[in-house]
Length: 408
Image (cartoon, rainbow, N blue to C red; front, top):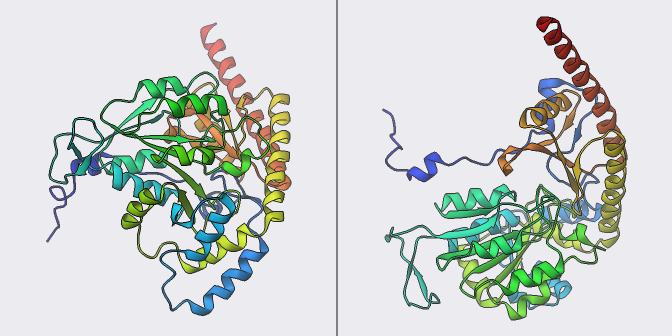
């Protein structure tokens, strides 16, 4: 007997494309068996995490039989203190991607207008008159597209401006009366570019009050020292319709624990808390996040590593006539002449044990994202790059010579 799911799962779920993550170290080792592996695909902290995290996690295991604190009170209080907000303004989640899922499930349900001024809205699960609408940039975090897609939302993807930068004016022009949410990843993933403070202010002021503003600051820490990077948290008091997303997966090195948080108006946070899974994140994850927050020396070491690696990476690519997009994040996006070139390069680097992220899923099939790693990992990238590009050049020359001979 077979279970026919076709008439039980919504058509939009059956037809949507799921998120395809990058290859793991284990996969690459099993397939290619390289002498060394540099995992430069997923924007993780290549230094690992603070030694204090390991100590805190081991201590948390003594009570592993108990459910974690569903309110993450200790972590919320520490985050509130550091960000100058009330603990009620913070919702702790299992990573910022979980927060995106919560937001989409809360705001991108099919909606019906209850008043002509667009301010009073009620969810009508049985009302299928129209899909909820959202606006974002074209080449941004693919996780948002996936979670919005789960809700069958209509997402307007605004093309990037020159240099793979945000076009704030075009994003504002895309907003309609029906728009429920606008999403901005700042700094952006995967381009590493950002919306400067002056542009951000204009963008923010141009968004109507009926639109939820979501600013994803997953890479916020890497913007430290960037003078024109906007401090969006300063605008929260005047924009109760704005939420900030943060994560411990990047600069703090806790990707394996899945911890993130949302900052916003307490009333709005209270509504989102109803949708969050009760016991996320785990007790070990909460302990890890607290310990990571309190080790500022490790955070600074991590940021220094990325700054040094970026400078080295830029110099290397410039020496080899490689094309890249300047970044303030922990990764740099390489730009190739075609999708075929990007695909061949990525696959060839895999064989050398260098895991990179092709960006076809992000709408950039001709681009490759490179996470900034340790000096040893960057040296392995450089050696592999020179070998791979040399081989590809020799192959191209041979093909050209063969075609020339055939035409003689």
